View 1 (cartoon, rainbow, N blue to C red):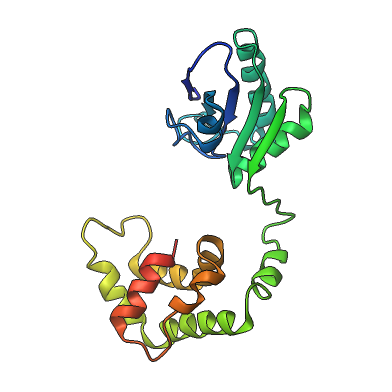
View 2 (cartoon, rainbow, N blue to C red):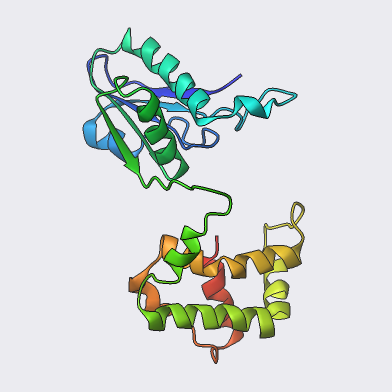
Length: 222
């Protein structure tokens, strides 16, 4: 069965319909829109994530339309109880989920507030590469790429040693070597996704010491 978590402020308050797009890790924690509007909140787990996956899994049942159907049923049931305005929201894949629901059921809610809603056209979608190759100042992009290349060519053993010695972390799903390589390969993406141009001055030079280089990777890589 699936999961959903309800925060109840009052029957006449707005209802925020929130989904992470993945499993329901928000649970009973209010999102920003809920706090701003002093609203009720229902946090819905996406089908086939968390405990919302049948066994065996029939992957033909995982489409954006079917998830929109799930939200539609839940919203319709809640509207019988809560007469106030309904707003859908979510961030990243949750923002995509809110957008797709609104596409299929435009009259279900009074508004939709996606917090980032990328729409990929393929796997892989080459538009992402072109975007990252043009974002921010050229000097910043060059410094970041030069650092990543230096990590792979000259500091791999050092980074693996330090990463493997981090207390409380175990590499029991992905081996240490591939995990380090992926974190370096995705450094540019993570930097522009979570930090951006204001942090260009924090990128260590390729001449920086090992401690500074590892600290930067440890902070930025996702």
